[in-house]
Image (cartoon, rainbow, N blue to C red; front, side):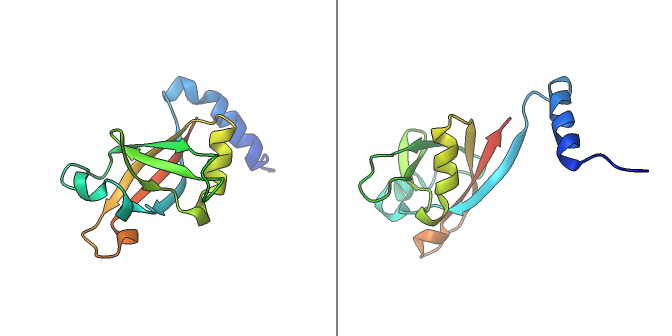
Amino acid sequence: MRFPNFSLLLCLGLLCLPAFAETVKILVQSSPLAGSQYYAVSEVWPQIKPGDRLTLTREPDNRHDRNAIRVDWNGRQLGYVPRAENRAVAAALDRGEKLEARVSKLREAHDPWQRVEFEVYLVL
């Protein structure tokens, strides 16, 4: 027996999703938060929790990085998506794709790159 192409199965499965699920989220990236030592992480540390929603905002005119994506929590800037990992997320935001971000890990670490990790999801 021959099995259908995986891409075809995925497409057919996605067509059936509305009957079974309100939304589907696909993890596209897990990253440390860049630049947190310069922004509000220290001030909001007691309130922020794993699972909290983050807002991603494109900054195409950022003078340091044309793919810059600011990361905010409850209206407070926490930092940025790391430059080495932001190209695909920037392109998705530029295309108008729906992305969500959430805090995945918090650590009491001296190194600011190890304090906050977050995940980015594509929402279908």
